[in-house]
Image 1 (cartoon, rainbow, N blue to C red):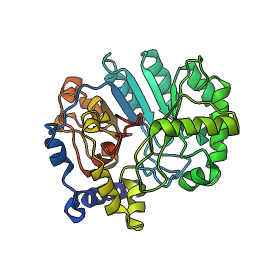
Image 2: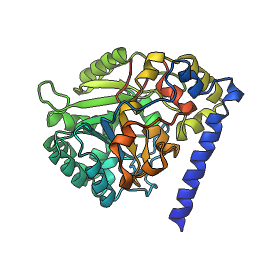
Image 3: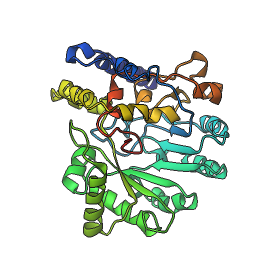
Image 4: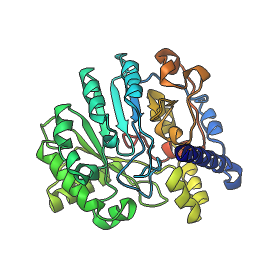
Length: 347
């Protein structure tokens, strides 16, 4: 009963967030659909699914202030092996080249390693979005760098800044120190080292209600500071805009920054970014097997268009490739400035 009540609370929270986002007249921002209609992009259409992004559970060893998933140690939503088996069937088509595993901390799913092993047999590019601290959180996770290497997993990890003060303010006390330890462990097996073929990318999120700076400039800073200060190497840095969802939306409202931030996103609308948003070549799968256009829509319970296609058990790649994408006011976050995606800048 407690679990059902919790799920009801989460759904109600998603509805409340949508109500706030749709109240665009209060902040004088045109509907996102109208904005892209001026460019001839509405309805926004899929260009064909290449990336299959899977949230394998919302349980996490951290409770980050900016987390749009609202993940944490108290979350009980975990993808089952049966649902993972449906994912394996769905990615059989060779046009789906990449499987992107997210959480929470995806490694906390008890079937995580089985899932990665089965995916690697299919020859797919596998991305794991690792929060770094999970590697050192418990001895049972200490061998994750070797496991990732064995399956040629691309590791993408969030590191808000190259200093402890700013990182810990966003992600919790001691996170920076543990992240540095984990990065050194990844480097030790070859991740981020030139010529190793093992990719280690970092993610930067702004610490407040502002757009990220230039991605190339930030990457150069991070590489210099992490190498000089800690002997750490990595491949690329992705600068990602914070979207007004979940904890970050709560922060914006509590600090009276919601309206200014939404205005900033809308005023920085970039038509080129709108043409190339990640949802056009991606489908997002929730822990329970429901389908969404992106990870952000997933957190707002905005399932894909087409009543017969909302769950993995009804997966139809052709129909999903032809679908119209569900948009709302939060989409301004992906089209502001240089654009934003799970792979960083768009333009």
